[in-house]
Length: 349
Image (cartoon, rainbow, N blue to C red; front, side, top):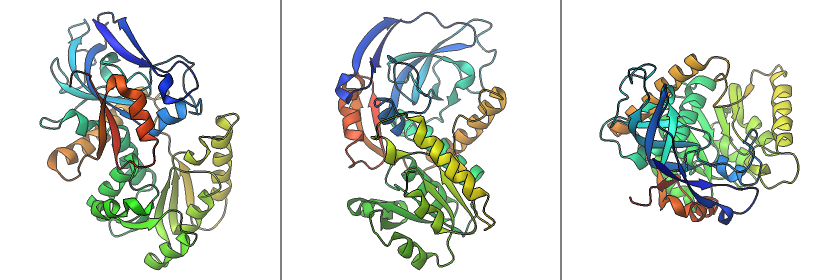
């Protein structure tokens, strides 16, 4: 079976992406051949093309952090060993891949597949895989926010942000969402109170809404501005840091901004003021406890997909592009005009 893939050959602009065709072997034991119906563009790929993602593979490689597709074939050994419940040939599935998703066919471990509920379109499901699991875990596992509390979501119009707002509102949590003013109407429609992220008095605006501080702040920006996020917290609040978007264009070692951020978070955790910080890593625990990691992933992603299937949350598809126009799609995703997630579809779609 031949596969078409988008290859990132090295550090460069989106237009350096190359189309490659190669022969895929038949799935081995514990593998599935998946025909990709949708893949997404995350902030990770924007960092990877700059060589700035913390643990990206060596160039060249195929980007693609997650995907949705249909199982075309399963490997031998009875075709069921190690296959999660509900996954079968012909089943629509979702998978977190970190890399490799920008292709029209892929070979994946069957243990990494999560069944997509019937009736959920591939592009819609794609918007809540990495974004949904990230948002769900940060809200319910990292910060443990309760109904009636107030949180701040930076970049509430983005892929993770727009999903996080919806999950929080579904849990009866008040959300303050920062975004550019041109996105405020959309942020308001999602259920959040919009504030301008460039407002020099942003902290004061937050305190007008939450005088005693907020229960949690979700910050993907990092850099010097994270001190403002820390100051927004009330007693017992949690700062959840999950990225360093502000440093993506800085020259130098890509690990240094992350290490500086982790050091700052550690120092804050030592302060006796009733607040705490955490750095969210979606892949934490997979290498040491793979079975538990996969079971929790299926549970968490299953929760989000069920909410999507029931209409409790809605897919935020910013725009779709054919796979072989991934360069154009990546350029659009980086334009600063996006609400939701940019999705890649097969050229035949």
